[in-house]
Length: 335
Image 1: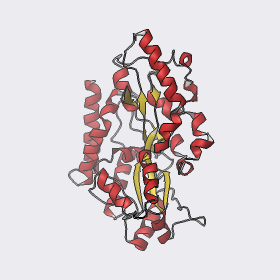
Image 2: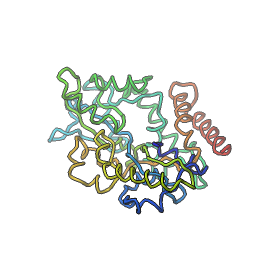
Image 3: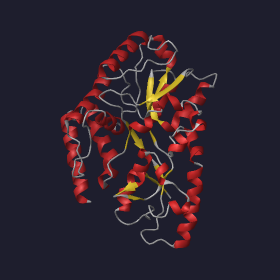
Image 4: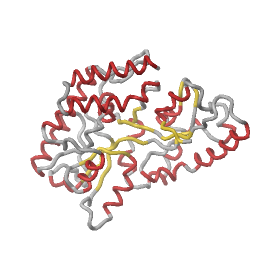
């Protein structure tokens, strides 16, 4: 089966998945070739419970023609990427004054992934306490939420849009860039080839580094074996043969825009020859793995609700984070 890697702790802790650490090598699968971030998604309590199919996450998709109109390109025509909050806000103001358009687009009814990335960009920022419990109501968390609200208030992002609308706005050329996943890279690249499309000059970069260090929300689809701790030997052997084949051909799924999960593939000429891959090569080392705790299963749904409440003014940012802290703690303790 395929399972999101962030959900593996919830199943593995109940002995519903087959441990694989001791059998992968015998099946020809080199777990040491997995990138650190991809391996982290299939690991729980020191045991491997799957083979990652991909490493996916949020990137910065950029309309280079709009950036050029605002004078925000380098001599070679590539975007002049800002680093740090001062540079980012300066670029945003320059862009808005020159084009009359928002600098950045994102869907604003699902902010948890972008918020989490901004938390981890801050020195010591995390959403997990040392004891494994949720850690949401923090200075870093408040900084991240206030930054997102500031972008909206100052006209640098479009407010109150869902995923489909946010994507349409970018593809119609109505903003300077768009936060979306690895999964749209090849799709957007194909839009450039459409003579009737508004997107003509497309560039991809890692999620914006607004604070101290790069960090981007990440996820992984993982192949798991749901036979529990005592699998049928024949079925396990057959499944491992299949997983070995999938692992050997991991580069094919990476054509979508997702990152490959094997270091040997990520470093290969073939993979790096795919469209735009070198532009967002920084994504793999900056990928943030959600906490390997059962409460992580509820993280996005609870955080999206509370962050949205702050975004539309139903709650103060402080109250939203405090409520999110309480709700996730309740979930963790119930587990």
